Amino acid sequence: MRHILGLIIVLLFIIGFSLVLIVAGNYILPSHEIGMLAKYYLYLAYNPWQRNFTVMSPEAVTSIVWDFRGLDTVFETAVFYLAIIGSIALGRGIVKYIKPEEEELGLSLIVKTVTRISAVMIIAVAASIALHGHLTPGGGFQGGATAAVAPLLIIVIFSHYYLLEKGVTKDLMLFLRSLGLTGIAIVAIIVYLIALPQGIHAYVLQNQPKPDSSIGLPAYINGQLISGTLWFFNLFEFFAVMAGFTIVFLLITIPERAFRKEEEGEKQ
Amino acid sequence: MLTYEEIMLLITALASVFSVIAVYYAIIEKNLVRAVVFSAIQSTIYAFIYYMFMAPDIVLVYIPVAVGLYPAVILILISKTEKVEKQ
View 1 (spheres, one colour):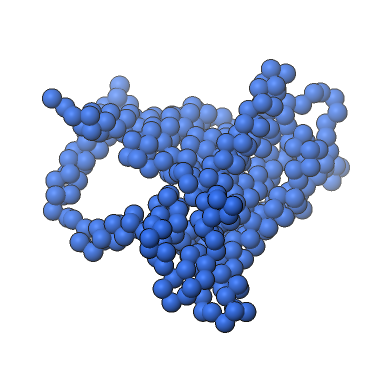
View 2: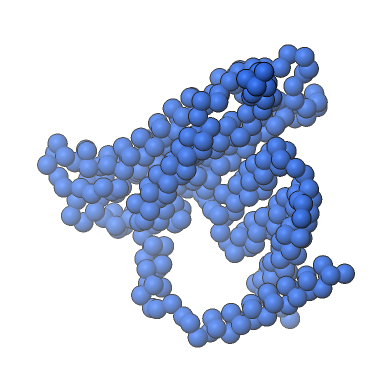
């Protein structure tokens, strides 16, 4: 009864607060310049007639995330990288491979068979989300987070050791993650590196040609739209995020039995 | 007569009210596993609201993280501690 009363009070508060916000929203309006900025983003996201300003990507969100405001996303990726380093530092030196032999690991055969099929499908959907990030909603982070569900399912349903035996170890994931971040760093300055020997001036995180810099990555490769740097950014971000999440799952599911035995051994 | 847009907004408002109920039960629930389930229900409703607000990029990152990864991580952590919250 007390819970129902509390729930009603919370709901009334939320609904009343929403009404106040609606009334306040009529008076607090964003300035005219901010509205113009949104219009320009939409106008220039895919605009082959404005080659010096466009991103050549029909996906406005990805154009903003990796081109107009690309530096923000690079730093976000760096923050994610450092956060995972923190969890690796907490789990340092505790990688052990002591597989219990007495019983069969994991859940039943039915669950395992379903997971064998669905894990492949999850990876396929994730790759599609990441590699089409410049065409349809999605992108590197979305694809990476989706792909990370597959190793998690395998850990829960097959066991920690199954993933390790298949070669998905912490070191491999660390390598993939570092490869992803290095790739993002290289793509961020690749236009500058191409322009440097030719004596043309270019910017960091440049994608398409700018008014005072006539160089840029090709928007089409063999007739396929890749939007210059966006496709490469999404690809590398996919690897960085997927490998980062997988490391956390590998560390979080380390079986405690092996360590408990060792601690008991030390006490005796 | 309500227009199509108004009906969609009403459904979204109703969904957000249900998400508040889910949050309330997630907070007061003493059984941690059930609290995680309530939290996952709230995340599902939020994903729906993002979809109604035409933000498919956020939906695509919200579904795997808030419905898949986050409850799974919390459940793994609960399995290493105790199932019921004590006073």
